[in-house]
Length: 119
Length: 216
Image (cartoon, rainbow over all chains, first blue to last red; front, top):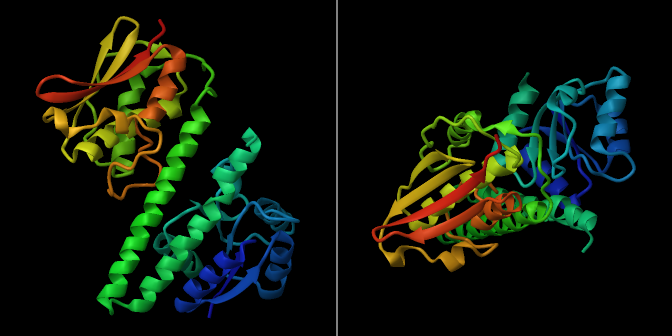
């Protein structure tokens, strides 16, 4: 069973992600911010990450930068309401494969996670 | 509300509950697995209204982003505008036919992205409000590029007063969120630069004309 790490500060959205992904057969690890996300990557080595950007303590981009600095980049999907993200070329160096702007279509997000985790 | 607070509110804070509503709807629908038609119908109503609310908020925010905020940019050539509009219509599967290109050597100082969004949004809105196919053409003039969107019909077909309201929901058509921010958005994009947007009834058709100021 492949593991997906969900890094999202909103608890309702984390629950939606968990139910959605578990229904698809994934094991889901939750983190409420980038600090928890870093710890979860080290502990669980997820197949991919789904992360928000604007979060307390350490935001999503900051978390991905730290992972990249430590050589621990993971295939990542960003789900964010922040319109002004770094350019895609820069995000790709951090492992980002796709960006979904909130609100987004969950069927499309699910398809993207399935594809990414299957790589 | 201060501009920064407003940006955070519309650009971030509202997006999360809207996303959660979509997510809860998705999970409920999946759990029904096609059973219980009444519940299915109720979910469809919920989804339609989530979608409407999302778009209304999106429109309002988009208008707020441009109203009194746009500054002139370095003049950019309008010759590439038509191909870009056609590309967006095709790429985003928007419900209007691409306008034909016209010879236009001029440039404009109207910011490119808001202008393109505004022109597309206005054409889609006319299409949605009339529920008829629209004809979209461009015409180059002295110091101006006109966008004409026309639809056949009698005077009762459209209500200009409603169409120029900032947040008006003319259709349940499901297209990419926020891709048709309606007439007030385009007007807010054009007017600071001397352009305009007019909707007139011409006897047997309605014509929406946007004038885009052109610099040499």
